[in-house]
Amino acid sequence: MMSTDLSYWWSLVGVVAFFHGMLPREAKEAVSRWLQVLRSYLDPYIHFEIPEFENSSSNELYKSVQLHINATDMCKSANRVVLTRVRNSTLTSSSLAAGQSLVDKFEGKTLRWKHNVQKVQGDSIRGRGSQEVSERSYTLKIHKRDRDCIIPRYIDYVNARAILYKHQNREMQLYTNGKTSSIFSGGRHMWQSVPFKHPSTFNTLAMEPANIARIKGDLKSFVEGKDFFERVGRAWKRGYLLYGPPGTGKSSMIAAMANFLKYDVYDLELTQVFSNTELRQLLIQTTNRSIIVIEDIDCSINLSGQRSPKSSSKRGKDSSDKDALTAEELNMIKEDETNRITLSGLLNFTDGLWSCCGDERILVFTTNHIEKLDDALLRPGRMDMHIEMSYCTFPAFKILVRNYLMIETHPLFPTVESLLVEGKHKVTPAQISEILILDKDNPDMVMDKLVAFLQQEPEENELPENAEAANELESKSQAKAKAPPSLII
Ligand SMILES: Nc1ncnc2c1ncn2[C@@H]1O[C@H](COP(=O)(O)OP(=O)(O)OP(=O)(O)O)[C@@H](O)[C@H]1O
Ligand SMILES: [Mg+2]
Image 1 (tube, rainbow, N blue to C red):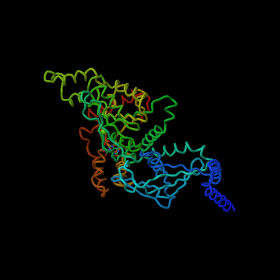
Image 2 (image 1 turned 45 degrees about the vertical axis):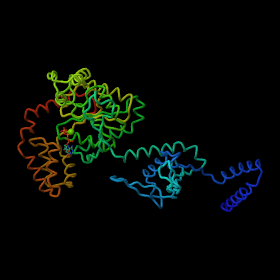
Image 3 (image 1 turned 30 degrees about the vertical axis):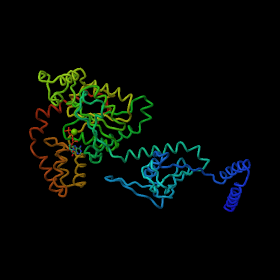
Image 4 (image 1 turned 90 degrees about the horizontal axis):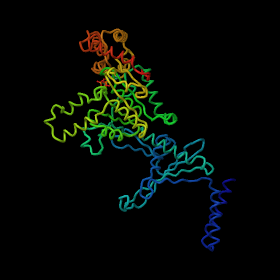
């Protein structure tokens, strides 16, 4: 009955439109207004066109819709879908084929997307001469009564989903600062980047599972904490101090953090930074959603405010050789001496910088010698979480074995457990990994070798009883005692 009514009204509109051309001007205008009212009564939907290009420039909203459709997997409900994959990528993107529609839901309202593809003659602006090109657009159809209550918010939601999806599926970058000096940098970009493809994740890290869960939880609440940081008036940043002996997974942890958050990594080599001005330029050039890493902080900077021996030797010149230097080099040393970076200077500077530019930054310092670190670095508010990367425990060992040998248990596990707990010498995950990698297809042989290794008499440089290791353990416990009430795990 309803459809018969509608076809009657549409026929009437058609007839009126036919005679419309023959009417005088005033009557024409009146009829046009009347037709508009009638049309909106008959079609209660509003259609938004979102073209791929508008005035020859690409329309970001079109790309956002495409990404939103990918992110929500809405294509599942379409009959025809276009699948694409760019070279060297592992990601398959899907988009609606021409003429296809799908339904989205937002705040209980129904919205319909349709993808339109039309062949048109190309124009010279897009550089295709007179070739035939495809003109694409999306049409969003919603009920007129829903328009005002959801439209600005729904478009914001589509954009936000698209940004998140793009971020999660993009290629991450590892940046390093090259060998520059304030004299030579001349304001050019001082970071060089390569694609970041480190395979370490929280699943491959050998660590107490409870600690991994705490770190992941901390990172997650940091990422979701924009409103919190704004409310309490703090810069949106988080600092982690990773400490422990060599080969316990500090660098692997940084890679796992980056992979978990999909953040770029800026590996800041402080020994290549020769002045505060240069440091400021470097930090300003880092982007949001990134991890800034300073490895071996105790070796990179001298706590008393002097350049470290490592730094001086890297530059290859010593003040005693001043006679042999050129005027330019002497100037560099002079500038170096007046601008040298101290740890507290660095921290004060980074704190100030975070407060005024950049969001969502993570700062990670690593050290093998926490006891050598300045109180300025350890005081609360500087490094929010102190994470000890320790020698291999049995739970950590099981993670390594699961990853390397793909076994969950083995008859030699109890022996390994007692050797790790009461063993003569402590071993790092790196040492265990070296044995586990010997033959992934022969777990029995590898487990035998591992037990033999753990039963060996400790070598000089591995002994906790020897001078260096004993000192290390001693100073670690002292350091723990003096560590501030930051979160220590
Ligand atoms: N906790 C761990 N979980 C998994 N693998 C580990 C772990 N620790 C070390 N390894 C293995 O040992 C190698 C070296 O580890 P990594 O470079 O992360 O140690 P590190 O603590 O950063 O050492 P350094 O203090 O010398 O920089 C890694 O490539 C990895 O294969
Ligand atoms: Mg390391």
